[in-house]
Length: 167
Image (cartoon, rainbow, N blue to C red):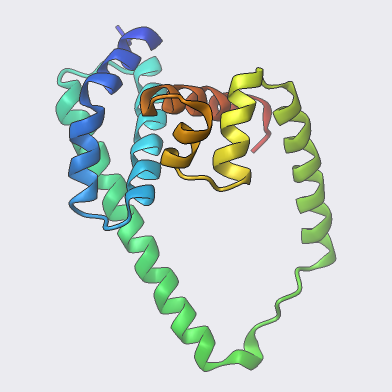
């Protein structure tokens, strides 16, 4: 039988600090480590809605390791592409196509509507993190909230967006 959201939240809170240390040992950027951890928690929570996990702690560690490896691979690919494109600057067309521009504007308008519909605290945390690009430390200083509370509000905000935003 799949686990309920409250049980998943308890598991996440219980293992948060140790998982963050685990990720930070592999990623030298604390903010990126927090982002990876947050992504793991979102995936874990969604996974638990449909599946049963025998050893949640081990599963979380495996998920964190996989997410960290994926991040490192993405960074390496991005670095490789950047070097490749820098060698051939005439190949780069910085202007998006008209279709891409229209699609991006439509998605932005939809996202603005979704953000406006969020509960106030979720919207505040979401805007600070994803629009103003504040770190978790800065958000904590501005709001007076603990990291766990910021995580909770951010998870709720992202879940709110995921449910309303078409793929």
